[in-house]
Length: 273
Ligand SMILES: [Zn+2]
Image (tube, rainbow, N blue to C red; front, side, top):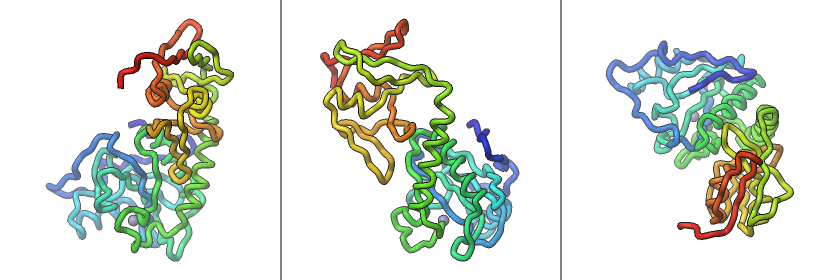
């Protein structure tokens, strides 16, 4: 996985951290990952090496609990493959990726560098792992309400994060965008989509409204659904864009791509269910 993150320093310590002699973490597919779990280390200071030693020697675990550790200076340490099902949120381990900020936030505050690095890391990972749509504090996972981790307000973190994300996404994506015209049942819509990495991304709300589909916006998770179907959408300046094929399927429309005019044509027709 590409871990070059603009504005952040990533140090790959996966092969140098202490590991259990025989035990190994189970593996999963990247598409099994649904959320990023944010932790604090609950220690005033620390390092990936120190955490790994504790998790292996004291807890008897296969390796360090976290996939990423973020030091107070904002340096991100890459500790486990995202595919490793490491131990950090109990029953939710299979679908969660663990990110630990060094510090005890019951008495300390995360540094601005740490929060910035966490934002950049999560944004980067959501591009690499599109199934990872949510960000939760450890405490927000089922069965962990009692645990004061990460001991800073996740609501505020998510609000700041989504603002950061929108800025970052629109900054990164706009220069690469090739506009795409959209035709519905033979007439061109006034809105356009864009081509990204060979995929046509269409404005969800405008297209769904024109086609008479039902759009739901789930504020808490920043999720968009069309006719009840979850889409791999991307938020750009507050508007959701989804891959044309997914959107057409949710709207029960047939779809064609006209390369010459860069037009997505969608029409009602015999659609297999
Ligand atoms: Zn935790």
